[in-house]
Image 1 (spheres, rainbow, N blue to C red):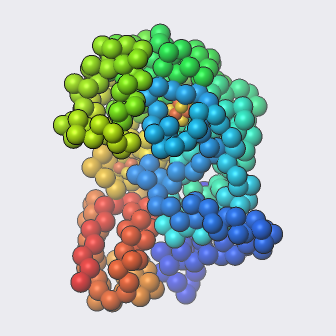
Image 2 (image 1 turned 180 degrees about the vertical axis):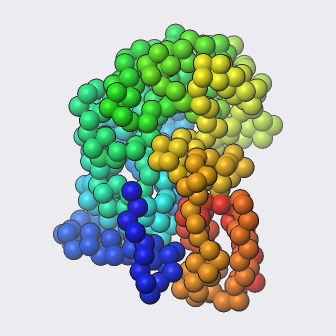
Length: 389
Ligand code: SF4
Ligand code: SF4
């Protein structure tokens, strides 16, 4: 649900940026000085979106303690607490973020915490509600919690087209791999409740744990289909040395297989906390084939499910095009030129193709180029090639 950008005195992209500023102004007037300062200092007000969209943190840390999780290498604790901003403060922080285009930039909840853990579930729903209410960012949330009737209803009213990813990567070994999480069978019961309430639910088969997820894929996919899920996001494992040693501790053979699939550079960074993806294209293909046999739609990326859930279209990366071509955003070279001039750039030439926008420009501040890239990628939804002289 995008608010019309039309302003007769402005081109459409300029109008989108101006709308973010107006939203910001309106929110600012509703907050105390203390609340404003807290939101302005928060990283949501300046962090760049990730490929899946703008990641929004509903909590700090996670009590599910999955062995394959990278958040512990990032310094997050194994106990969850709610994120310190109120929902309105969060919406305000996001409205200040220059990389965000209201109505277009995707929002992803749950990348570094579990949103619906008992401690964070209430605030997570309110975050989704307020962010959608103010900024209409197409939203997605990934969870290992059980969605009950109350939560499903609340989510549907907070963001009617929410993309809900239910994570299951093992049925038989979840107790070892995800010691604090509810059982996968309960998660699937929750998925069927969410489907019944009209949410767009996908199975999140990420990360594939080699030797576990690929062997159980048939059973997992079958259970997902039986609970009414008809799409799946599949993704490989990212490792750090401590993830490898945790996996080795439960099963040396799994640890060996993960190491065999690790790229060369992993072996030279033994003490690093950097996450590196293992080779897993063969496993992805195998699981995708199983899912297709069950009639599922297979997504190579989480954002692709989000785009489908909102009946939108995107061709911003090589996985695309994703979504509904008849909903491709219609922006013209004049919209882009006006936007770049508004930011102070000069000598602009713009060429728009099916999947790419190529821009030459000069003048203006080089520091604004990243803002240009992110705003154009999420609005025009094509790859952006910038040449700055
Ligand atoms: S539920 Fe998610 S955030 Fe929490 S430990 Fe598991 S993978 Fe990490
Ligand atoms: S083309 Fe698809 S996979 Fe790529 S960014 Fe867009 S939605 Fe995501």
